Amino acid sequence: MPVDGTIACTISRIDPEQFRACYASWMQAVHKTTVGQPIAIDGKTLRSTYQCVDHQSTIHMVNAFVCANKVVLGQVKTSEKSN
Image (cartoon, rainbow, N blue to C red; front, side, top):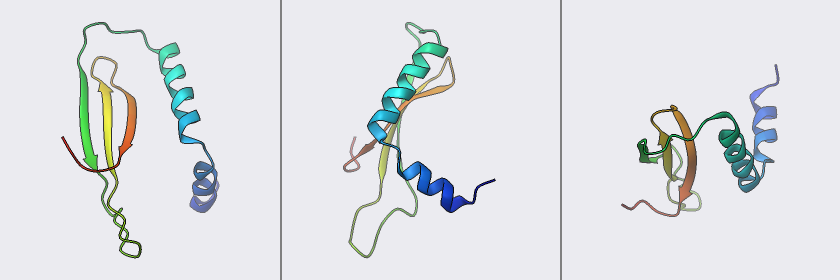
């Protein structure tokens, strides 16, 4: 089993946009479309992400979750917390 540093190094090299496209394509292939089913939209602020050294804000994320399939459609980092 690789150590956590090796896993973190490997994951940090993944292009987020390319990963999003691959994930969306995979989800379309393995799950049938559920027309008219609710999609839950949720915002979260990640704990322990504020950086005091360079005064960067915490990370805010928005998630889309298909209730019928119990699967995350997507997740996007936002520039600031808002409604």
